[in-house]
Amino acid sequence: MLRDSRTKPAHVIVLGNEKGGSGKSTTAMHIIVGLLKAGARVASIDTDGRQRSLTRYIENRAVWAKRSGLALELSTHFNVPPAEGETVADIEDREFRAFAQAISRTEYGYDYVVVDTAGSNSYLMRVSHAMADTLVTPINDSFVDLDVIGRVEPETYHAVGPSHYGELVLESLRQRALVDDTRCDWVIVRNRLATTPNANQRRLIQGLEELSGRLGFRIADGIAERLVYREYFPRGLTALDHLDGKLPGTEPTRAHAAAGQEIARLLEVLGLPLLRPPTAQEPLQALRGSATGGAGRDRPPFAGLHGGR
Ligand SMILES: Nc1ncnc2c1ncn2[C@@H]1O[C@H](COP(=O)(O)OP(=O)(O)O)[C@@H](O)[C@H]1O
Ligand SMILES: [Mg+2]
Image (cartoon, rainbow, N blue to C red; front, side, top):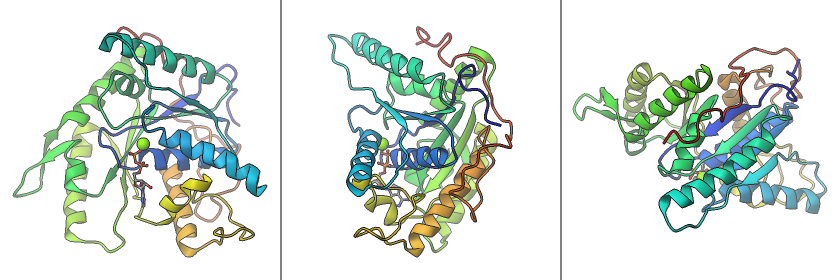
C-alpha cells in the first residue's frame, strides 16, 4: 500500500552532478514520468533557474498533451528563478527562501519530490543535496566526467580518492544524516553509453567500482546514447510514453522500446520505497501496492538545514 502522504513527508529524489551536460534533467524527467505512470503522486522542483531545462521539458509536455489530445501525466512543478541581490548572501538567501517555499508546498500530499539541480557548486545546489533521500548522479562515460567524483592513477587506472564533487556529496550526506538520522542512498548512473563495449568503458567501470567502495555509492545499469532521449524534448515525451502512431513522429521504434526498458530497470535499481519495482515486461503498469520498504522519513527534510553554511 502507498503510505499516507498527507502525514508522511515525500521521499526526496535529487539529481545532482557538478558537471553540466551529464543528463540530470533528462534523467529527472524520465524518473518523474516513470513514477507518475506507477501511480505515485509526484512533485518536481527545478533549481537550475538559469537553464530551466526540466521546466521547459514539463511545459512542452503540457502543451503537447493539449495539442495532441494525449493523456500525458504531469507532475506538480515548481521553478526556482535565479535571484538578484546586492551581495552573494542576499542572493543565496532569496534563492533559499524560494526553494523553501516550493518544498513546503510539496512536502506533504506527494509520494515523491524530484529535484533537478544546476551543474555548478552553489548554495542552493548544496542545500538540495543535503535534503536527498535518494541522490541520483548521472555521469557521461568518460574519465573527464569521472574526475569530478574521484581521481584515478594514470598508469593503473586504480582509484586514488574523491575529488571536489565527491567531497561535496560526502559532506551533504553527513549533514543529511545529522538532520534526522536518514542515510541517503547515492546512486551513480552511467549515461550515454556506447553500445559496443570498449577498453575505455572497462577501465572506467574499474575506477568507478573502486570509488564506490570508498565513497559509498551504488552503480546503476547504464543508459545508452540514443537519439530518442533528445528528440522527444520539444513534445515533452519520454521513453516511457506510449506512442500510438496516430501523430507524425510518434511511431514506436525499437530504440524507444529499448530506452523504455532501461529506464524501467533504473527505477527498479533505485529501489524506491512504496513501489513494486517495474519489470522490463510491464514497465508502464500502475504499480500501486506491495511496498518494498526503503528509506522512509518521518521528519521534514528542511529541519535544521538553513543557517548551516
Ligand atoms: N542517454 C542519452 N542519449 C542521448 N542524448 C542524451 C542522453 N542523455 C542526455 N542527452 C543529451 O545530452 C544533453 C545534456 O543532457 P541534460 O539532461 O540537459 O544534462 P544536464 O541537466 O546534466 O546538464 C542534452 O542535449 C540531452 O538531450
Ligand atoms: Mg540540467
